[in-house]
Length: 339
Ligand SMILES: NC(=O)C1=CN([C@@H]2O[C@H](COP(=O)(O)OP(=O)(O)OC[C@H]3O[C@@H](n4cnc5c(N)ncnc54)[C@H](O)[C@@H]3O)[C@@H](O)[C@H]2O)C=CC1
Ligand SMILES: O=C(CO)COP(=O)(O)O
Image 1 (cartoon, rainbow, N blue to C red):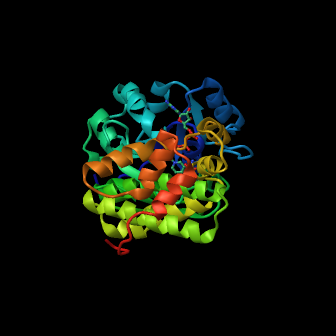
Image 2: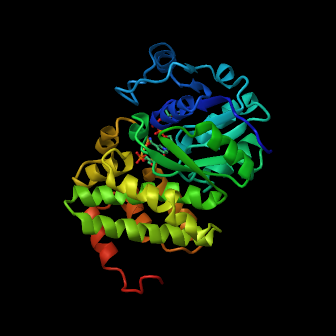
């Protein structure tokens, strides 16, 4: 596939990132149709040019339209952007499979690893849509939706084994405030995006416990070290973790109060229950809560040590006290920084 121009794009999922990425594409001059699960959300986007539940106060471009009918949304799409949470991607995509236009470029926004199969999102898409996983374009990087929706400058990575497909989406999405770079390391970009959500949970917990910059920097740096260890084992390019989908996304998510994962963790650190923490993120997805389980299993399966991910699993799924988990993390056997 060379020199393809993408004009007509469908975004499946009208949450905060799906809506924001649709806005990015519309601001880049594309014709964008969104699919929303709820008919009233589709009507609000189509007729009122807002999505008040997910992006309050943001006006959406008038060239962006929406429907709750997936067949209507997908008709004639040259690119299809999948913007639903990781753990629901398989079920949603199975329902859409027969409606996908044959030549459409499939683009993944989700940052997670599937429970059970332990597959990355491009692998799930490849399996369900029956396309080579190398054809999928993965979007990753420091992209807090609310900032981008306000047209604050940001960069992203578009990763695909098929460089031409990544370039086609790069051309379709770059605009005055959004600068996407291409990359061919899909494994590294997807692992970076999934793992940083788990590390952001830990930073939130540390913040909720009242700890400051040294603790955050330690968690970010050691979180990057364990992410890179997993990546190296699974064939990622180590350079990816020094880039936007690695340290870039990690810093943005771990530092920002806009992050749902960090917010979730902060509430846990303050002593709230997981149900209260979930309420604090307004019913939106905090992917790290599920991904700490799947990433932990993935890492154990290939013999990679991921102590922060293990700690988050114990807090989120075994109900362990964060103070005790923190003490255990610090009390592990002394070691060399890079062993
Ligand atoms: N919000 C952000 O700043 C960013 C999010 N992402 C990733 O993008 C993906 C989507 O995130 P958001 O749009 O932010 O999520 P969200 O929670 O704001 O919205 C999820 C959307 O998916 C729909 N959906 C369809 N089936 C669903 C199901 N079974 N369960 C739950 N929701 C379902 C919801 O109705 C909603 O429209 C996630 O993997 C997230 O990690 C990536 C970069 C930035
Ligand atoms: O992926 C994100 C920023 O790049 C969004 O992070 P949260 O899901 O924690 O809000």
